[in-house]
Image (cartoon, rainbow, N blue to C red; front, side):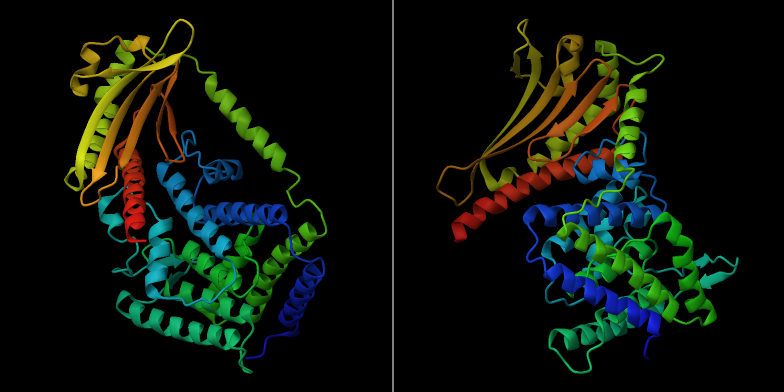
Length: 451
């Protein structure tokens, strides 16, 4: 069906804007990095915020640069934002190109952006829903989505239609639809199916932007002030037979906003929000306030011993247990434990502990040390003659009122007050990332042998 003049006009404006950008020549690497960061920040913050994520834009920035230490925020919000950023960073990095949407790809994206502490819910991630889902719309009425038994067929049909339309564009067919029509039609249909137990909105926006980016259009996001309009349009179309035209025009204007940002960068203008600095200062202020505690728990032998028994011991034990699984593919594995101290000249050194680390705190005054390190060396892979030395470390630093957990080659760290333990979810995440580093190292060494 032909769209209204207003949507047609939006598409023409976007095309004009694209041509204006091209007239400036190729964007520099600095300009591209500035745009990518802006798109990531707005997309990450707004899309996750729409689904109830509590991280502020400043905290979103913090997670994007690898700092998962967001004070007193749900770990679910932090991990979901981190997963979401990983997905869209890769989409923006790859940019335009041949696109084939598949069920596998959709499920992989859902797996990457969702996080559940409940073991039962974790089984639902990346799987089509098995129970009906519904929402109460802005009119206070139930809006029921596709039944679970119909999801696979409807997704299959949606992918066939979308991929066929994309093929027509990429092979320059005369009857090829406009990229915006393809992307926005997909968006509506995916939300109508609502194939997952949760996270359907975020997944829909990622997939819609994936289509746009692959076809050389910028991504869109929906600000706070635009959300009610967005949801009303979708409800009116899906529940009351409303026209798609106004909704397509609405989304088209959001794409045009992004395209205008590209033009501004090409013209040498700044694209940061006026209040970005204020938000960063606000975050710094909150962190400073957090340092001003009435009765802070300070470092002592008793405090660290209690912390160790409550959670750090489980972290170290689980890291040790998972690492030992790799022993069968190496000729030699060494498990070492160190305490970290500073001498009177403030030089830091490691002192190797030869006894069982489980008995560590019974023999050392913890108030006098600066940290502990579990170091595991893996030497010489089976069936490879050359020398190979790999390793992983898990370090815990003790400060006056807080402690920090970090590891080699893992980009982020976790910093907590002594009054805060490491929960089971955090332990699982830390150990998983440490093990992933080792697996990556092993694969790289095996790849060298096969080249």
